[in-house]
Amino acid sequence: MFDWIQDFADWLVYQVLSLEATTHFAKALHFFVYDSIKILLLLFIVIFFMGIVNSYFPVEKVRNFLSRNRFYGLEYLMASLFGVVTPFCSCSSVPLFIGFVRGGIPLGVTFAFLVTSPLVNEVAIGLFIGLFGIKLTLIYVVSGVLLGVISGLILNRFKLERFLTPWVKDLLDKAEREEAVFIAEKTPFQKRLPIIWNEMIAIIKGILPYVIIGLAVGGIMHGYIPEGFFEKYMSKDNLLAVPFATLLAVPMYSGASGILPVVQVLVAKGIPIGTAIAFMMGVVGLSLPEAMLLKKVMTLKLIGIFFGVVTLCIIISGYLFNIIL
Image 1: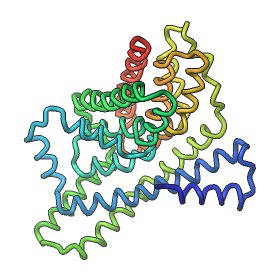
Image 2 (image 1 turned 180 degrees about the horizontal axis):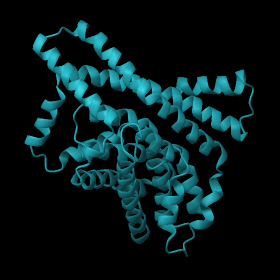
Image 3 (image 1 turned 30 degrees about the vertical axis):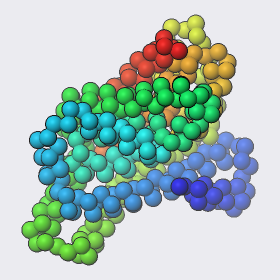
């Protein structure tokens, strides 16, 4: 899907700038170029598409429908499964998260997607089968989906909408006003497009500084933190290895496909599978660049609650993996 971006990043960094691919700076810059283009492209597509959808399906009606009808948790499962079929890393999931919030989807349901999307996707599943076999892959996929569902349900109980930033609240209020005008005046589609386009540009301008800073931090981490740096903290003799592995993974940043070979090496070195998977979940599901991107839409308190709940669920999953396997 993003092969052309990969090719462009390769051409720019390795041919135009003539940087050596093995150097830390080249790795960091390549990561920054690739992810910046990918995330900005996703922002354009998702926000524009959600703007069209929201112009015909008002935010308030979506909220009312979801609040009046009981789905008995299926909405969390559906959001989590949608996360499985979207091949995004934690930072790339943020544009869809913003689109869901703007579309009136309950915050707990959007969190279910945000948790599962970077953890489990078709690329990671294919690699997982090749590295660890079908049985362990099924256990991992089920646990990843359940992690999203359980995290979403827990976070929903806290009624966290009040911790969204004023920028998001203003965005929602503006969307509702525009939708009311569209409906009252029965505005044709071709006249809605300029309004939707201008709103999309305004949203991207508001998010852009956070995207650049977050990905710059991610690039530095990706290029300069050695992969074997944390291995000494994950030995099977350490009872606190699982929480250590989860917490120490946060400074690293990678997609599931990038970290899976590292997990295979950790397991081959005798590190328990649950500890290694907890490390993987921490790397792909929680990252400082993701937190910086989310800062535009969440207060620090909400980011802390989100990271805390997901971290706790990952730690529990890691211990369960070690017990079962």
